[in-house]
Length: 471
Image (cartoon, rainbow, N blue to C red; front, side):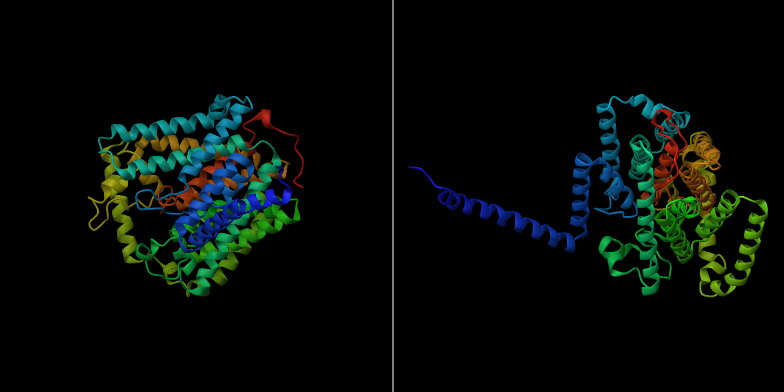
């Protein structure tokens, strides 16, 4: 007996119907859980990004850059839920390069700066195992974060192959940072961290200090937000001044203004000093004539004299250093200096300051205290040898980028100035804060910036394409 098409449809329809219903129920349930629980939101985005890495790698990179400010937490012991994605990014890039028969050795060791990164990584690891400090969770967490930062650097450096990618990354980074600044400004207007913040970070309902007028945006802490914004603002200023495309100029202008306002609303003294350093650097390198530079500097100083006093009246914290901050900072600096002099060569081991300092600072909670000083913490943890390695490495990126600031082509100039500004901001803010362990967003962005600079300063001559203006 022969079946017609209608009979076939009648047989298959129930089967297809129940499959469709099952898919609909699962999808609806997952959407409901995503809306109700931030864990499922993070899991959904994690799965989507992992699939994007397999299907369309460029989208995966852009999404990773866009989501840098978000820091989903799964539990207390494994805080950075996006840390595995950084290693996915690295190994996916490894496989892409092998598939294209690109030299892995050239990718990982092709320049002196890359060799310097591996040398610095080696010093960091050795410092942990020769320090004599018992192995502990804060140290391993710090090592994992640093490995994730290196993974971002090499992945970005290996992925960039043409100028269009570089321009898109800049656009995505600026758009993401505009969102960060706007959310922070909304917090200031509402006068609270907002319900959205506590939905994203429910653990903060118990851990975060009561609202005092200092914004955090998508980050965990106001000082970290100021540091994060100061890494992007140099790129925004350069895009606003040097960009040939009108959309890029407007995006850079919006990001620079909103970012500067958000930095002020963090009330971070170190962040504001770093922002001032970036602005002075911008005037010096992006304004051509000396007389124009002097006019802008004098005009800016006059504006500050006129506007800062009434502004500071509304921000008591910026009028001086309170006793609690002064006492705690001096105490942590003293502890860091003590630990350094006890282990001057290789320090107490990378990440071990949190583990050891609580015994030396009365009332400190183990695993949470930082030195609040980039230089003292590095000296304490990795000693003079590690500190020298870090200084030489960062200095190399700065001076190589500095050579490209005067390039006739605007694109390498934008990135080169962005790298120089980000490094200067980090070094200035580092006098009163240490953000690499406290903020995975800051650390990942810092090394991503260095990765952009590695490409834009032409570390790979074989990758170069004819220099043309940004369109």
